[in-house]
Structures are given as structure tokens and as C-alpha cells.
Length: 198
Ligand SMILES: [Zn+2]
Image 1 (cartoon, helix red, strand yellow):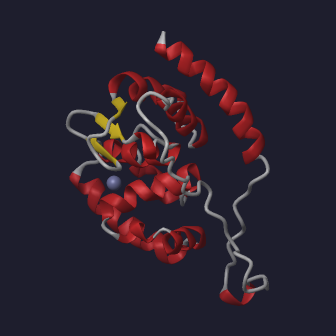
Image 2 (cartoon, helix red, strand yellow; image 1 turned 90 degrees about the vertical axis):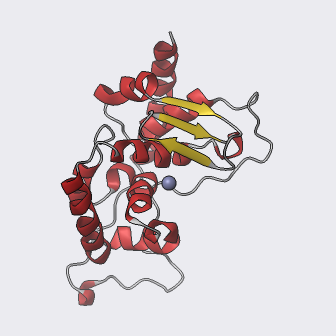
């Protein structure tokens, strides 16, 4: 029943987002510094694919539609259909005042989101912490070096990390923030570190 409602919401939001994303494309990365197109200093060369959403100070447990937020996250970040049941049935995502912002428990597969911060981006961040649980110890070591490498070589990631420096706090938060702000537009060598999300 809940799955059906979410499926319907996903289909509607999907159509809207497909229209929006058809108007967005990842800028070409210059091969050498000398090839960079000349743009005025005040014009950003890149945009954050999924910018931080504003908080909603008037949101409460009663007036917040978490299911729509979850559906919007799954559609915008293109969560594969094969994994959507895992996120809607296997993981318990709920509104709560227990934390001022949000939290995730990878062990118990639970996510708590304060209504004020119930946005697709915050849900994406917390669910990335759940995904991280499925990485082996070797994967986690590889994630750290792959992230460091991409941060130097990928212009879009570098741009986003300068706008959202919390990404540089530690490798687990970096993992969540890369997914939150870049989603499927993250550097392709990082995609293998997002089980059940990409
Ligand atoms: Zn986090």
C-alpha cells in the first residue's frame, strides 16, 4: 500500500525532474589549464547539481510529508528501481525531534530526520551512511584514496567541496556529502562505493 503511493509519487516527480535534468549538463572539463574557457570572474564555471535546500522553520511532525521527500530523493538521485524496496521497506526512515538535524544508524537500518530539515538532500546524506555499512574494510580504504584523487582531478567535485567544506570533515562525511550534492553526477570512479544507491 505504502509502496504503491510512493510509486505514484515517484512517477509524477520523475516526469518533472526529467524535464529539469534535460536542461542541465555537466560542463566539459578542460584537459590542460591553458584550455580553460575564459569566463568573467563572477560567473561560476560549475553549478552544484543538487544544491542545499533551505530549512523550513515552521515544519512539524504533522505538516511534513516525509514520503514525498523520500520519493523526491529517490527520483532526483536516480536510485535504481531494484533497490527502492530496500529503502522503503528495509530501512525505517522517520521524522523525529530526537536530533536537532538528522541521524542514521547503519546497524539498525534507521534514519531520523528533524522535520525542519526534512529535505531530499538531508535524506540522501543519511542514506549514504547506511550504504557505507555495506563497504568492506578494503573498500573503505579504497574510498579514501579514490576520494582524495578525485578531489584533485575532478573539477566539479573540487568546486562542490569548496562550496560545501563539511565534505572535507572526514571520509565518512565526505562519502555522504558527495552523494548528497552530486548524486549520479559524481566522478564515475566513485560510483562503486555506493551500494544500493547507484
Ligand atoms: Zn553525516
